Image (tube, rainbow, N blue to C red):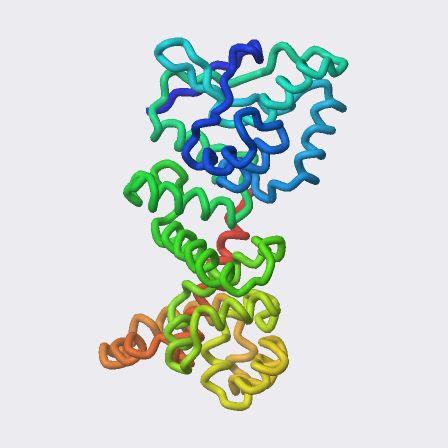
Length: 338
């Protein structure tokens, strides 16, 4: 059990930056022995330990905000080791800026910084604190950065899924999807973009959609690769990104497939045949439709269940997958505090 950190004003000179964090060490090494606060910030962004979208622009915004407010608004987080050493586990850029302000004699009092101090956390404890802050807390990372951190915990630190779920909540299925989406994006999307500066993390949601049932199977069935998919995302043939979910139906339909390869998913989707709904079905309200669907699923014969299972890219399977996604989105919205 990780207790709450003790809120204290801590002398900046007593804080050690986490320069040996294995997630960012290789990035810091590019800058030599004494990286600037901006270089530290960019390394944290590359290593997945800082708020997503770490760029020079966002660094300057952070720096300007601290100067304008005369200090940080959010306390940094420190781990007090057994020998008394204070290591920054969250907020390294802010501490580095304070240190830089002191050395540059910037006007203001930068000698002390508000901090939540934890006592002798092990590596799992440090990860738990970061996850609570950035995956479910008030300063959440963007989805790509979350997935990057989760991938690190799983692939490099070999944490079991049960531990990761315990740290950050949610469902194991969502965490697995997020990690797999990160892996696919890094492997295939990065392979098709021409310039590193073109790597757009906002396209991550397309690779999350790629993990849904039947999508990859449909690509393989029609002799396309994951690199083809990544190229479609990069060239915005798949736009908006949620049209990934109708990709199996598009690829199954020769006319829609040809339109897609020339003009993209939005026009291809418009060419798909719309379901012929009876007047009674069209007039039913959401509750009636939900009850009818629930009854139909409960009465589903085993043979039909097996047929759907064997054809995840089929029209019925994909329609059901689309219903699941829309219901999850709706129920999440209904259950939110907003």
